Image (cartoon, rainbow, N blue to C red):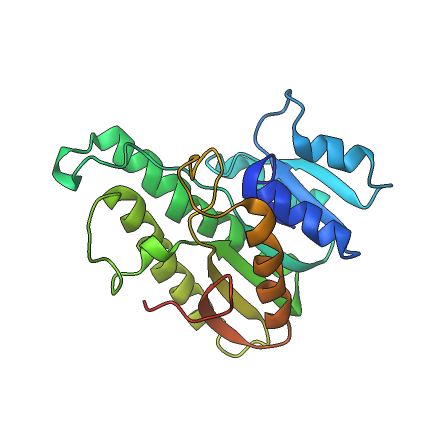
Length: 223
């Protein structure tokens, strides 16, 4: 299951997994608009399923849980950003709250609500960012986004610590700066060259317990 799959990286993750023979559930936020995920589902022969979820609406999680079956993998891709050049002291409170809730709190709410559907030796992951690395932050800027991903990393580490006795794999993925609506056209890497590597890393972690913070090549990112 890929949460946040209407377009961009999430849609590409669903398409890549489908292409490798998996049955995939992808979620979209809008209940009315058709998306690339719907187009993929239409031609998938029933192997791609579209579900509705706005991750910032916790009341939607229990009904979604009840509609789903067992999962081998749960990966939360949904996220957002703000005006990236604004120093933290000048960020409007509403912008701060939106980014922190969408990127840190809501993904963990999804994971906490759906984790019992994931196989005991399955994988639970979330789309983080290299910019969530405190060690690697030598330039500043993009400060709310950086902080939200660092918070996500901390929350995921706490979640994994509470499941230390399980056989599940936990992954925080830092895919690199990719050309999407969120990443903008300035990003150096394309979806086509990045997502197959991301999927390689995710699948390689199945059956390997514990939490890893990894880039698309499977290298550890400093916390």
